[in-house]
Image (cartoon, rainbow, N blue to C red; front, top):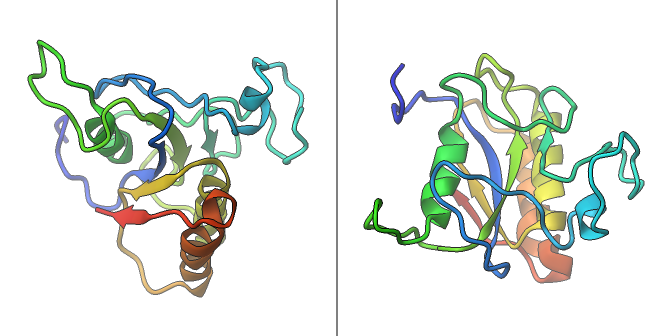
Length: 173
């Protein structure tokens, strides 16, 4: 595929924290949220689960597909990241455009493996619940598959209980 091509079942949950005011461009992704576990304590990656959430060094998001702290997309498998980057893009001389939430911080959460195949409903639902605990808005740039009670329950949890009980708006594209 080519850059920017819609690859169908590709992408991930990208959580936008609209209140942080950190400038982002389309190609730049940041994941250091004030409430994000180890990052919230101002700690760098050190190989220890400092916040006790079961995820070691989740200071810049999490790869739920590979269970590691590197949520970077591989090859052309970056649809969700690109969509979140566009939404968070700030106006600049080169781009001459801005996203709907310029300056927000992006929390990358990967739910597809490196080939772009989705993992399990439980892993996807767990990523959604994690996003609801650490972000204000959920931008879900993925789709396909059948109906899943586990994923639906995670979305319900996010929209009702996320943001400390205020609920997170969840968008799908």
